[in-house]
Image (cartoon, rainbow, N blue to C red; front, side):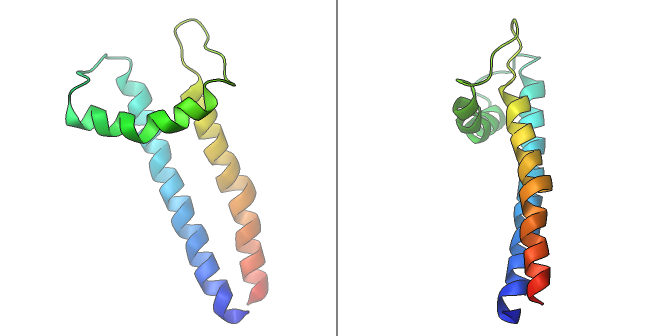
Length: 98
């Protein structure tokens, strides 16, 4: 089981880092909606392409409050749940294999 522990620990670390990066992408995308940027800008298109699929998954379940879209907050909360709730369990399991 020793051969499984280190790759599993590395995988947890990589997933956590990618989720943190994705959280920052979501924050950037949400902040850019306040200034109404050019939709044909390549950076805006990349950000929208990265975030809209996740937002569209949670929008049917999350209400909008006036003109405020709460989907980014729901996605960030889901990411926090995975990072702080699930990944530590997997890491602890991997450390137990050592």
